Picture 1 (spheres, helix red, strand yellow):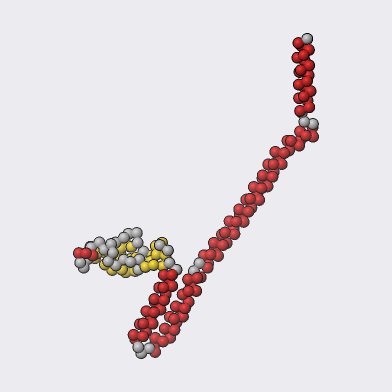
Picture 2 (cartoon, rainbow, N blue to C red; picture 1 turned 180 degrees about the vertical axis):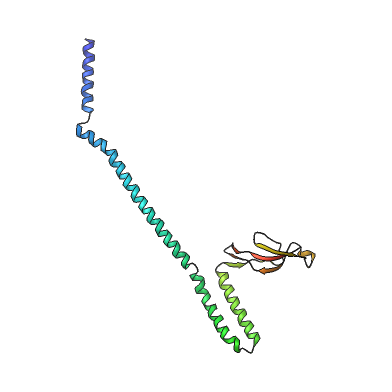
Length: 177
C-alpha cells in the first residue's frame, strides 16, 4: 500500500506539472517576448544615436557661427573710435596747431584703450619689474644702467597683453645684467 500512496502522489504531481506547462500558443508568445524587447531596445538605440548625431551637427554649426561673430561686439564698440580716426586724418593735413592734433590723437588712443579694457584686455606691466618667463620673452640682455636693475626689465620692445587673465601676447623685453 505504501507503493500505491507513492504512485498516487506521483500522479498528483504529474497532473499539477502538466497544468503548469504552457499550451503551444503560449510557448511561442513567451519566446518572442525577449525578441520583441530586443527589437524595441535596438530601435531606441538607433533613435538615440540619430538624435546624438543631430545634436553634434547642430552644435558644430552653432560653434562655427559663434566664431564668425565672436568679435562683433568689440568691433561695434570700436567703430566710434574709428570714426574719430577718420576725422583726425581729414583735419591733420590742414592743422596749424600741433598741440591740438597731439591732444586729439591722445583722446582717440585713450578711447580705444578704454573700450578694450572694458572687454577684458589688460597690458602686462614690465618695465622695472623682475623678469618673469610666464609673461615675458627676453629678446636680449644688456648691461644694467644701475645695480638695482640687474635681472629686471630695462626696456619693453613690444607690450604684452592678457585677455580675461589669459596671456594673448607675451611682452618682448630687454633685461639688465
